[in-house]
Length: 331
Length: 227
Picture 1 (cartoon, rainbow over the protein chains, first blue to last red):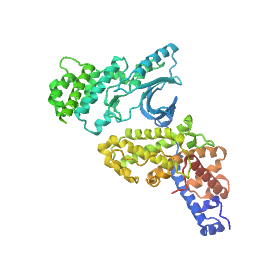
Picture 2: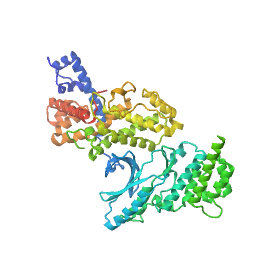
Picture 3: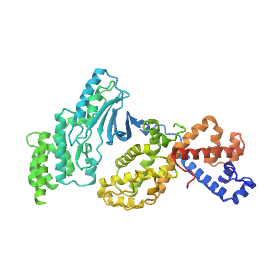
Picture 4: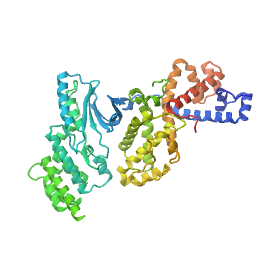
């Protein structure tokens, strides 16, 4: 045999079977054929390993999979899922013309409502898109794709305060500074009459400049203003939205709770149920100077009623500025 | 799974080809999730699954922005190597956010890739360059976990495609390959079951194997005969 055998003639040898005497003799004396045979054996080994998984019957009930997530919504590329609810999905995405990454919230149902209602919602969405505050992630867009409404919000790259709390101890000047900024943003959102996301650690992210930004404004708006209008939705069955949860607690109370979480104060009793003295003592225990602790406690857990978010923002800002001033003065 | 003359890596360069991106995700997302999970677990970075998914999302956004400029050219570098470097850099990019638990581990991670890790923001190299020749001297080749994971991801896509294509037109051809090539049963036995001669079993096995190899290389830049 002068020429090398074809691959199918090597197949028997690759499987440990006997081939013709002529082929076997050729392979014994041909380095190229031995290399070829080795490559066939390697490929078959990889294939056998893969086949046990790839060709196995699919499970009867597949879990929620990638196939349920679109790779694009309109012109937005979808890179992954951030959260899923029964009535909406929240995705992280990008647009080929924008440097900024986005958070896209898409309704899971279509919305066959009349043009007038759509126009009214679109007008409301313009108020949302026009809103700007340094401590609140920007909302860029509201639209429909295949009759499903969606919103586009700035993606704030950076850890959520929940991740910060889990990974390190936050110093009180940072905590009071962050809460001053977020409280200001919350007050502005309320003043603009917009829907509020749940004011918890997950909804505040630290951006590249280490500044806090409230996220989820667009999702809260979609969930509270648009999704209830979608035909076929059963309000009694619908899960409570973040905005509805938020309404059950005052903004000031939620922000005070967040401040306590940042300082890792003892958990168990809500801020509003604590006495001012007890809260002040806990704040001092977390490193807050005595006078600041007493003043903050009086605002966070007032003896005779509830503080407003504006009052809370002013108080946080005063102590954040005071600390900055002292630090500048004494180095 | 769609099969056209244009390969998947060429199709995803067109950002309007939504179907191609769907296929791209179905192949590469499981690979990236598994690999990133393994890397951060081995190095005790203290990340949870949310962090892992964040990194994989970072990778896909980079791919979305960079793939339109990507030229598949085996002389210049492999897609799987390029994807590997994007993956490692995406892991390292997130480390500053976890500095308290991860800085040392990140330096270890970067060092294992053959590059010194500057404090604060370690990085293996700039994966913005598609030409891989300039990084070949700076960093090692993909590790074994990556090579195995990449091959598995590609075969998970290719084997069912080819099974469906061949079974539709020539069931005996696929069965020859499956029973003899994959299940290692003697060719004579398979031939008797299928009512064909043993030589045809060998030929069918070789043809399907060749088809799989070509599909892996042309569509996914995977060389199946590599150890």
